[in-house]
Length: 394
Image 1 (tube, helix red, strand yellow):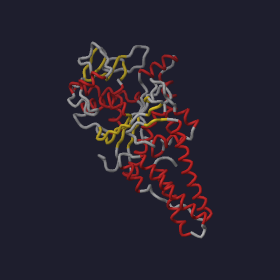
Image 2 (spheres, helix red, strand yellow):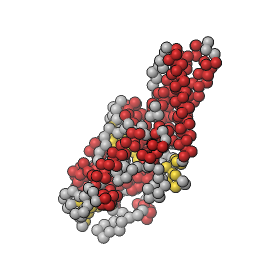
Image 3 (tube, one colour):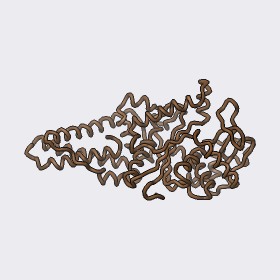
Image 4 (spheres, helix red, strand yellow):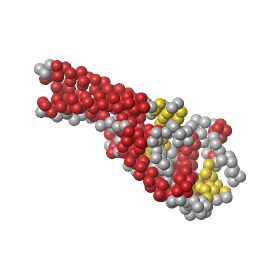
């Protein structure tokens, strides 16, 4: 990290216009494990996960109900926090800072002004647009050629654009839409500038880690890089990027637009939340994860077995008048997490420790004279508990 005592991390959070689905939870869960690891390793962390509370989807939802956007965003931001807490995204796994876009209009306007002054953006017909041809590195994050990106993207064709690929930093608002006063008139920000401004405000011009879903790599993260580096005189925006793979459900990417979603607030009522968390950690974060009832059921059975092992050993310890010794997270689990956050490998270590503990526990039950095995059993149980804590399963 740039600061050896305190890494910085930014994760793209939700747009709060509805309840989130389980696919939206994968990033917060896996990157929460990373946050806890960084806190153990460095003693500190500044971790920001934003709330997007101004957006055309929010405007549409508010318009349908005839209420201010805050009535929509406050409700669903609270629901999102409750959902994440139910999945164990709290304590050491939670962000330190949860910036909301609507609270950072001055920072967004100031960044846009710097981009205009530097020749990287221009005002046209109440809009401000980023000029992609003014940033030679455009496409470096997603490793795409700008011409190919333009051909493969849904690009808004507008007469005020100098280049079809230029993207909106600010746009005008009618009286019926939320808006803020700016040098370019009454309007609202584009989506991409929000994260750049909030990251700068809370973590500085260069951050250690930026994370989010792979579906955000282009255009959202690509545009964040372009506008942030131009606003900061070419300084790197993020030193490391982590993108989690998508959840598939019924053979297709889980998405509201497809209609194949399972909402978190419904799932946590129907299943143990820690089993849902286990399922989200069961595949490497960069790979797609096939979500299914069978995956949830297997996760429930696995955790029941792990928890049962701990209960059995704790009962033996209590009967013997001893307590489980304190234990840090086992080295093998830390090594697995160090290896690109390999949660499946860490879960495999936990399963092996539990298996060893059960075998030793059975030996003790069948031969109570083997009291010399008790310290080893207690050590295994302590390692099991510490490993579960490191992954937020206990």
